[in-house]
Image 1: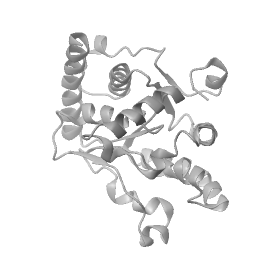
Image 2: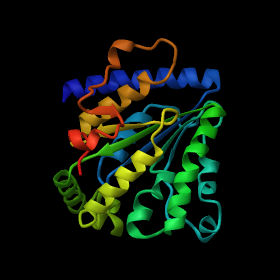
Image 3: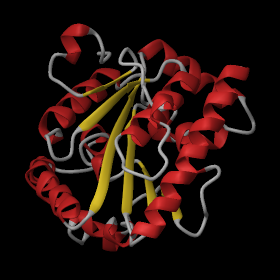
Length: 250
């Protein structure tokens, strides 16, 4: 526990350095955190943002689309939340909802689903070409760990608000979510906007290694490189062999 706290504190100091540099340099940083239900997205986002400036840091977790959202270009509802100069924006889920929960739960049509994949890479590349530093992480856990976490949430009065009707179907739809995840990664991973996969059965190790990878991937002044060596057993750039190797859980 002490080692975790000490390492986390050192990494949070690095995050403050990163933000100071980003503000001074007018950088735009955007981090997408996706993953299985109960994979630990909230926890890692909390640790990233905990000591950052609230004026230049925003966490985006959008709710159910409105009628106007559904009548608009799909990506339009996300555009107002993109980072401006000096801002650090973290998306707790993102436009990849279309490739995940919307696909599994039947909230989008087949035509809308296929259109998403034709547009997502050009959209992200346009953001990157305009100067946004985009990073994408997918947190993966196994079925037994998800079951245990969802049960713990239901029994905890401080966190049972996190349980939604969709969460309650996560276990019964496990196979469909696996297929949707596999298709999403295969069709949206590329050299310009790659996916990083985080094995997240151990929450604390997942947080530490995601933050290490994020910091190591961005330039900032006075970087302490020796702190930022992530464990390749827990975090790797996506490749199609991950299913065969067992790095991704089916």
